[in-house]
Length: 352
Image 1 (cartoon, one colour):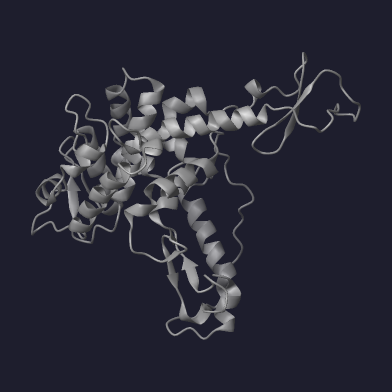
Image 2 (cartoon, helix red, strand yellow):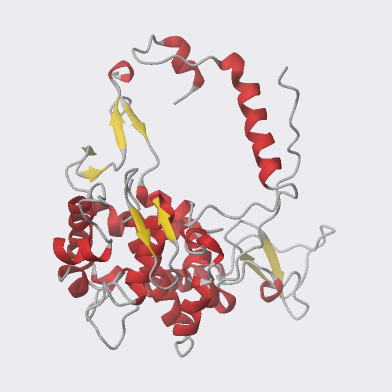
């Protein structure tokens, strides 16, 4: 919503004083510096929640998966991340999870993260007793209210808000997995099979970028070079390729990188139908958007205000790119993620 919205309309429930925006920004900056003096801010992600309490749970998982290939590890971590994020709705103020392995007690998002992590590693979402580290359609269909209640340690004294809603979400996920074999596979549909789909698409795009362009190649100084091809990277940077390769792709960090837009599209297309019955235009589910009466106009869709839905959240928060979160070992070989750069230029001003 644009700032002008607040001045143009008289909202019924609140007002925004934009003259206080600097104070608000400075307050946030000061909090950042207080918590992270060196600005080494970790990604806000499910992967961070899995490490709450300084327990090396991800190292435990890596040890469990030690015998798997990088591709198989990637699929496991896709399954884990997606299942855990889908279960991360508000837990309520009174629910908590006691981790049997450590005796530690967690609540809210951290509790849900640790609980879903432990359940996943135990095979709670898998139909294959010989391979517990997956969330496949048959495994999801076997979950009922009783098993979910036990898994989340729910009782009258430890109530979890929205337990049945979480169950329905898992059940609809299982149904959606069966609807798109291209994304989720045929034999044992699971979210992790999106890795195969993304790799195939990446290979197709890489092939397109290797095609010769009609544009003439030039040297850096503007002189034409002989016997070279013109290739284009995902970021529209062009490289000269011949016996003396200029800026060769194998030395670049974007070699074989799967684009963030490809991941987001796959997540939206594959998982959007988990939430049926929301607003749509021309049969397309719009997701977490809601109408505002003061925005209504003659143009279709003007009245909708978007919120950060859980699907873009899967893509945006759980990564430096979603793949970085879900497939760390895999990325070392296929898609090395660019290192996070610390924020610079943050300087709090006086709020007097």
